[in-house]
Image (cartoon, rainbow, N blue to C red):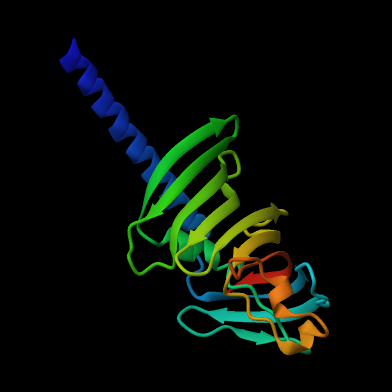
Amino acid sequence: MKHFTLILLFLFQCFGAKAQTELADNLKKKYAINRGFETMVNISIDVPGLTIPPKDISVFYEKGKKPQIKGKGILLLPKKGFLNQFSDLLNVPAHWILLEEKGDLEFYKLVSLDPKSDWVTADLKISKANLRIDEINLTTKESGVYLMKHSYGNGVFPTATEISFLTNRFNIPLKFLGKSNIKNIKDKEGKVKGKIFLRFTNFRVL
C-alpha cells in the first residue's frame, strides 16, 4: 500500500510539473515580443513629499537595443512595469510553485534559476479563463520590491499598470526636490516608497 501511495504521489507531481510547463509556454507565446513595440505612455508618480507632474511619452523599443523615449521636460522612468517585462520575466529559467487556486485564478511563486537575473522571486496572479497575468509581485536582488497590477482592455497587453514599490534605487532629479530634503523622502533604511501609474495607448507590436 505504501508503495502504491508513493507511485500515485510521483504521478501527481509529474502531472503538476507538466501542467505548469504548459502554462509557462502558453504565457510566453501570448506575451512574446519578437522584434519590439511602440506605444504612448502617460506616467503619474506618487511619492510622499514630492510633487511630480504627470508626463506623456512615446516609447519605441527594438529587441536588443536601448529604448527610444521621447517626452518634454525631465522624465522619471520606472525600471519595471513596461510591456516587455512579461517576456523578460517569463524567459528566465524558473521553478514554478502553485500556491493556491481560487475559482478562475491561480497563484504561483516563481523562483529564479538564473544567477544573472535581477530578480529572486516573482508571485504571479493568473487568470486561467483569459490566460493573462493580472499581478506580479517581484522581489529583486538590489532594487527592492515591486507589485504590478495590470488592467486590460480587449488586447493581449495591459492598457494600464499600477506599480507599488519599495526601493533604494529611486533616482530623483534635484528639480523635483524643491525645498524637500531627500532624507525626508527615504525611510530609516534609505528606501523610497511610492506608486507609479502607467496608461498605455496606441500600442503596436513590431
